[in-house]
Amino acid sequence: MAESLASPVAAVILAAGKGTRMKSETHKVLHPIGGRPMLMHLMSSLGELLPQRTLVVVGDRAEQLQAALTGTGAELVVQQPQLGTGHAVLQAVDAMPDFAGTTLILFGDVPLLTPATMKRLLEAVDRPGGPDIAVLAFRTDTPGAYGRVIADADGTMHRIVEAKDASAEELQVRLCNSGLMAVRSEHLGGWLRALRNDNAAGEYYLTDLIALARESGRRAVVLEGSPEEVIGVNSRNELAVAEGLFQARYRQNLMALGVTLVAPESVFFSHDTEIGADTLVEPHVVFGPGVRIAAGATIRAFSHLEGAEVASGCEVGPYARLRPGTVLHQGAKVGNFVETKKAVLGAGAKANHLSYLGDAEIGAKANIGAGTITCNYDGFLKYRTVIGEGAFIGSNSSLVAPVNIGAGAIVGAGSAVTKDVETDSLTLVRAPQESKPGWAARFRAQMQARKDKR
Ligand code: UD1
Ligand code: CA
Image (cartoon, rainbow, N blue to C red; front, top):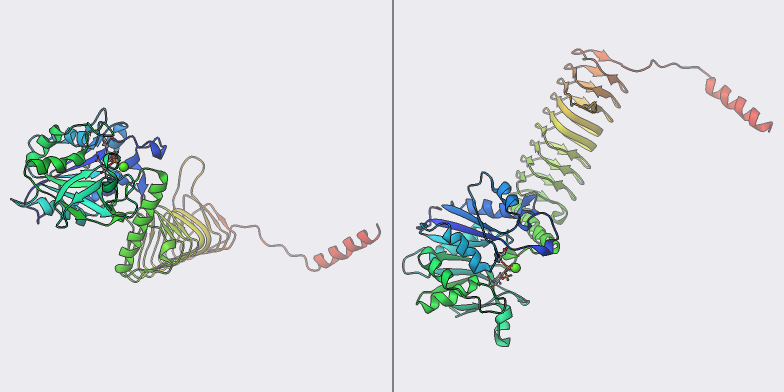
């Protein structure tokens, strides 16, 4: 339990809806935002509250959620058939009869809720004599199909009315139910069991809890949040909107931490991208999962990084592609049209142009000439290339792995190196140059004469 909360927390994440509008074989809550499944965004935010139990209510495709949740400590509860949000929460509550504390109800398809807001909801009911229910709501001029919150100005709620069941007057209400709430556990089970489905949808509405609580002399309060934070994802279009909001939030956080983004809206991050202060990121850079950039590095335009670690003083790009297993030590440089994979570049090493460096270890201050390729794959297995400190690899060399280039060695341009190269040696693996003085001039004269005769 988070230290500021008196009562233990149980989280219930609803994810039994069919998600048909996604038109996908993948369970809706497993679609990624910032490279991580929506459900895992919630799991990670919940982590900060240290819930005693986390229950995920699932209908179809339970096996997909089971796989995704392995090792997280979350438990799956199957709701079959799906008779509404109230029915869904009841399945979870029935699965934890001994729980006493606060139950936090979340939707698996509302992934951007922050730990701070979760905590606000919990704190609202986390004291004896306080309200039993805290509902998160938001204001919008286009309330559409959202449930309308009927409440007093001081936040005391009367009820929530679903749009389908609302009167013309109620439909004018702009305060909408996000669906998310915190409920003290004492009466939750009883109220859920008392829900009826005599409404427009024929479902057991979780939202009817508010009226039930009020009828039994208990209080429910509404807290207002930002519409962006409670955006729901039901379609690919909404997924893109949620992704956009996530990216905007991530960019702002990084800039607040001292990262310069020249054109923030053109740079895309993953949920786990780490970048240190005073690092400069030029426009149109994409960070896939698993990237760590130290302070004071420069990532130039149109680079794509994934599973890479970049130390301070490094320069990457423009147009660089760092793939998983790339490690750039202090001040290393990877320039345009260079692709690296499982490649470690020592401090100050440089690969400035047009290279592929895979399964490679490159010593400090080594210089990898333009067009150098590590031939790491024979169609079956992968092999390593090790280049010593200060070695100089001439342009357009092929290093056929497994191969070691000694420290300080020079490999002549255009070499196809298949054998190890000694420390401080010069290695040339190319046909010797043959020159024929005057040949070109004689050739041209001859050919011109032949052509003139035609
Ligand atoms: C619900 C709220 C509505 C609120 C809206 C916000 C109710 C009755 N209404 O409406 O007031 O404005 O969310 O988006 O709660 N689910 C299950 N099992 C079910 C039904 C739903 O697990 O039997 C899950 C869905 O997967 C989804 C969530 O509950 O994650 C909400 O269900 P949904 O059908 O989208 O609720 P709405 O009708 O939109
Ligand atoms: Ca919905």
